[in-house]
Image 1: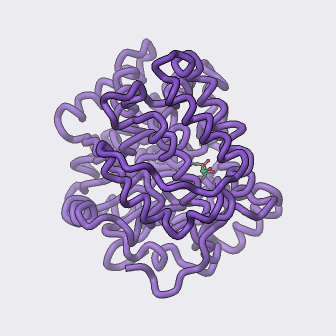
Image 2 (image 1 turned 60 degrees about the horizontal axis):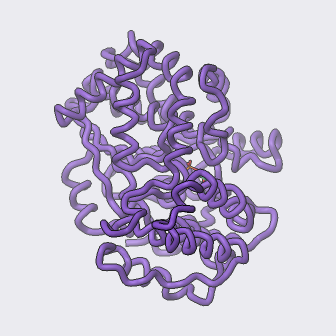
Length: 421
Ligand SMILES: O=P(O)(O)OC[C@@]1(O)O[C@H](CO)[C@@H](O)[C@@H]1O
């Protein structure tokens, strides 16, 4: 059930906001245009004529902020009725006037419709239109990852703070290395992440890591952890490393990677992305990467790492109180701690609403989430709750124009089910 009083949803109609910049410009001029360019060869072939026309029409609709359209009925896509019920109140709204979360996720769902992603007869069946960017992101991850995995190596089986903190904060700040903001092909040989990790602690605007660490380290038995995954590329590598640490230190007995059922946003991970990252690392010439990839592969074969896709993670629904009953009861019964990664997942955790950045407590906002939950999020959208007043003022003072959107600042926010932190 939703909390009794909810603040308004974010919209993208206000010039000067990141939401407006995203929906009025970034989505068509950078994200969709680059996707079309990256797939130009396939899209120009006769087999893809209808797919290409449909994607160009989507580009045009977004560019001109046209009204949202219902999805076409599709026997291969059981999510269409749900989508159309979400869209129904907004069919006279445009990409800018509909709630931001709905309009933005809708763009990616329309890409899936254009591809005929679920239809075995379509040329776009199971085609990931963002694969080129994901591959570039993976290629640029190795140098930073090898250094990180080398540092984590000696700490991996210690059930102690230094290893746990390094693993968790790597996964948090890994979220800063997002393909939609950082160029995926920025550097293939340079370790850029060590600098980010070393300088970032002061940029935490809310830090519940002490109570999380204390709960984890004092738990009488290993936990079943669900990791609600965000980006492929370097961030996913830091997530795999964090999950590996939790298993090898016996803090967790299993880690379930909850991934997107179909490509969503630029780099959000699907099952294929996770498996391809593991295989690519296992085959790496860099020793720390190769050893990690082999361990991750072994975790997968032994069922200690599980990969579960769900369409829910691709939908603009409130994570805490609009989870489908079957998924909710699966998590209630099989997960002790959920780790929610990244900015877009965080927006869904907060239902993309304008909570008071300081006054609304994280634990109150997410109290309906089915399990204990920790959010590891760098700020890339103008939304938040439960942050420290003084820290917010410092961030705003240092970066008045963009402190909420560049990923420079972050939060670790933890709610313990049945006795919140
Ligand atoms: O979820 P992530 O990868 O951390 O961030 C995704 C992001 O860059 O794209 C979303 C939409 O534009 C925003 O929520 C956020 O700015």
